[in-house]
Image (cartoon, rainbow, N blue to C red; front, side, top):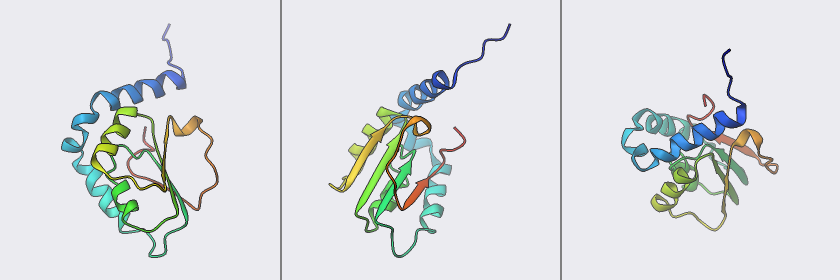
Length: 122
């Protein structure tokens, strides 16, 4: 009999794997960097007031969001270590808030725009 992993176990495994390699992620994330740059080119000139980024990781796309004006930016990632790397790399402004955990099981407040770079395949 084949044992299937529960959704929760899979999420925990994904988080552990990203945490394990967080310290070298940026070095190997060439495609994700290109995707972030392309995605940033679609950001509106007039940024919405409240933004949620799902899967912020080490901040490859976050840096583009922070270069725009917003009143509140919520940054989410499943990996605590990826978040730690982002915090070391980026100066997070006081209007940003980190929400750690699996976005599929979290309840977020209403926002004006949701963004994600290279996350939904997980």
